[in-house]
Image (cartoon, rainbow, N blue to C red; front, side, top):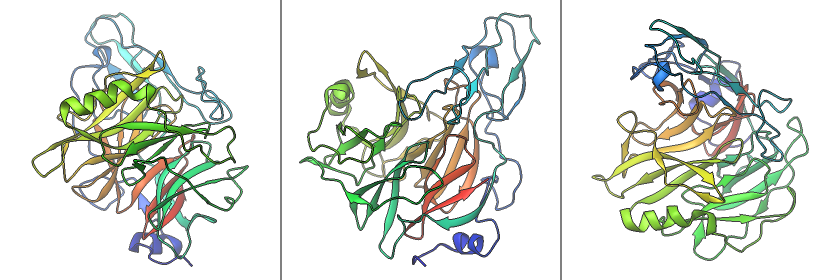
Length: 360
């Protein structure tokens, strides 16, 4: 058995729940605490139950935009509605024009706020007697990037029900490491990295999912973000790519206890990542030594998983639409690196120096 399991994981392996969707205020399985919304559904606000199905009342005016996420996780192409790979469709906020009091139906998101994660088990082929830390997993569960003994490794399998094949060390380009995180694209062919200096992004690629990544770094798509880091003196960490590959979520922070740490979203347009939007502002900002570090994003981009360094807890935050505020939150407990599969009925995470998985 892999060493170093957390108390929660050991309980789950004995047959109890290791991690439950619970309020961040206690250890019970109660409904999550909402942090309050701002505005209404028509204007892009989020109510205290965002993320799960329900209704919203508008104050009139034009509705928020409807967004669909789905497509094939293997090629990263987005399409409307759900498919066999678990892509989820979201029409939340598509209220249209209407008088005050108009009811807007909010479809359930891919991830449930009341999920009960149970059956913690080490990930076969990945968890060993060494120290492992999960960095990134494709939503189809076929490719994984992780640290083993501090070095970056990758592994592949042909089906989510199979064991991962032998892990292979990744040869990193000069000036880059994985200590601040790494992000796999959903087709498994691109790996986003952060420079050892912390102030620039780059990516490496490969031609097949079971092949090695090349050692040539490509920074062209990140030119704007990298120039911005120089101007703002910010550092970057914990990149996560969306299901369709068109959104990059990451932490931006000023080092030091007095520095500010926020979560950004950048969108891909004409082959370049745009100037980022701050999605944690006045909701879950941190400091340079207690950062919110993104770890996973649901297939419909309505649930963000991140590690709160200030509390040492993993958190899931929910929203009614991919462009709405991330108000509602669930404390996932003493684990790190949580990321879901495409249907959000299984999560992968790090606990006790091993990579584990649980199901809902």
